Image (cartoon, rainbow, N blue to C red; front, side, top):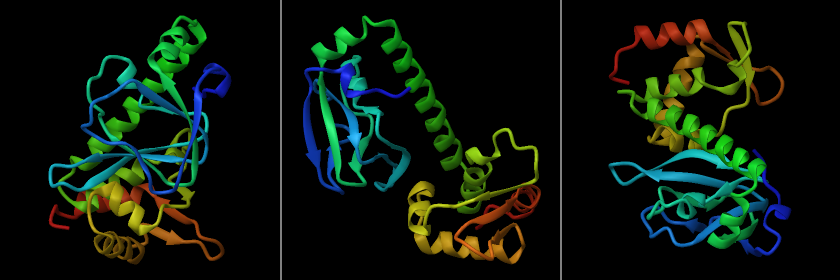
Length: 214
């Protein structure tokens, strides 16, 4: 699913500072996509109340803005640099040439499927009626559960501020709910290091037992 500068030999390089919005949701799509050569980006979408929520993050070797080169007239999300980042600008002519290569087309299809699945997780999460249940869905769909038959996983979660963006709520609400999960033993802090342990059984029971007024 990764792409390289050699896929676009005639593309120009640009540098953007941390915090820069390269693509604005709702803008006309234009004729440019981007490849991340260094740094990282975050894809955000606007909620009905005007706040933004995070869809996913992008790393070196990943593309964004490609839908504008595939017939989508407006940008479907905003993309911000979360580090100082170097990008490769890709125009429609370059893109159309690349699409003639079967390997490239396969990578594009794999990328689009992955992003569809990631976006589906966000829709499922934000469709929950309470912040507790949004957080629960987020925790239960962490990639660490994949191919793990155990009831517990060890993870390092994003900061409460980052979780708030993922859950479309305030940092204070996230902190309150996390404290409650610690008190019930659903989540346990590691004695050493920053990681935590999550119990799937306890988390599931908590989500079933607690009403939607959190």
